[in-house]
Length: 178
Image 1 (cartoon, one colour):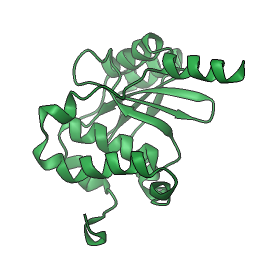
Image 2 (tube, rainbow, N blue to C red; image 1 turned 135 degrees about the vertical axis):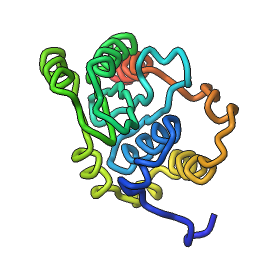
Image 3 (cartoon, rainbow, N blue to C red; image 1 turned 90 degrees about the horizontal axis):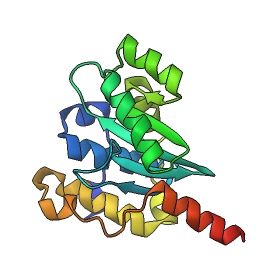
Image 4 (cartoon, helix red, strand yellow; image 1 turned 90 degrees about the vertical axis):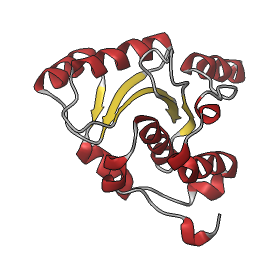
């Protein structure tokens, strides 16, 4: 892929994506905002988590919702239970849209972080392509997927050999400290 094809996501591009495309785009955006160990989970049986990631000592279970309407409490519930199942320190719902008042109330009660349209735009503005040079292996995974996303194959979506949950990351971290 030549340099002329590299592009930065825009909110308008994200608004047009299908669900799995949006999940991979969110993973790429997080990676280019300094998150590490970013993995898109398998399409089914993900326990409400679409993306797992780490930033500093925090692990994140992220529910992605590319919606044309506001996101309700179900996404907050799924993120909370998915974070607990994966032993992550933070649950997040990220959307290209906004959240209902009920979703905001539940998130405030459960500690789930809500990253709505404005937060997503901020992440897009802070997208740093220099992370491709710092971690070329993961950059290639996200870039390859980005350019194949028009013709997504089930092979790409069901490849789970490199997916680890937050629990595995936490165990590895504990082993390094001992």
